[in-house]
Image: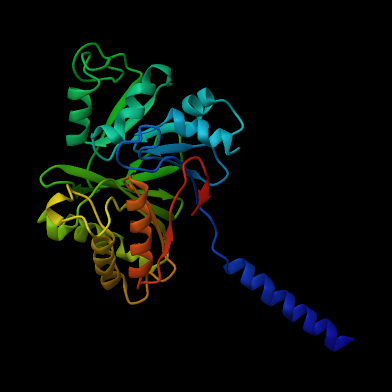
Length: 318
């Protein structure tokens, strides 16, 4: 009986140790839109919050209302669409000002509550001058052309500077990306406590863009990968490998993505990306191309990545 008790205690301690080492979720994500292309009901927009909170930020804002409705259908939210829009979303982070990343923000602005829109200087100028300018749309911001209605606070992000996110406990750091050089997009490194998520807006590969922006980004985040502080990377793959480089228009294919991630692994260390979570965004229709992209990524995944394909309105955690 004594030996049985000792064995039981040992097994209990081992199981407790295994449980304590299990990866803890830090972030919860609700995709409001996941695609690139022509589906206006399902364009790039990802709600991100610390787990067990409703302090969401919206990473890009191509589709808002239709995505919230889909999430409510899936019982992610048990409140009205209006309440999610007004109370749960604490701010918007716009990677670049192409319409498929801002149209939801613009269209929903009359029904929204006061909050902050974050973008780099170049992106913010485009938002002010071309959208919220009292001509294309009423100026719901607090600066820019026409008569500012001051519903949104337009906050310019300085590249590489850690910035607190209003009404949350998170911070963000912005990095430039090349999206048809010299046009800029943005990557957002979001921090919650001592854990991180990296979200990339549209980006082309360095080799095609004649740029070093992705290499610079990989260098900055490599220590977080080494120390297992980075919970995952949201990154686009818009086209299958058959798309000619001259028609990429600042986007990635499976081959180009894997080439870039090999560079990250070289910087972070051998096998550092084993089981690392890569969330694929901005898949462009038609459906046969999306299926082809998924198959090509599966076949080319020689880094042992855990590849995630988010679904509109379905919550997941990192």
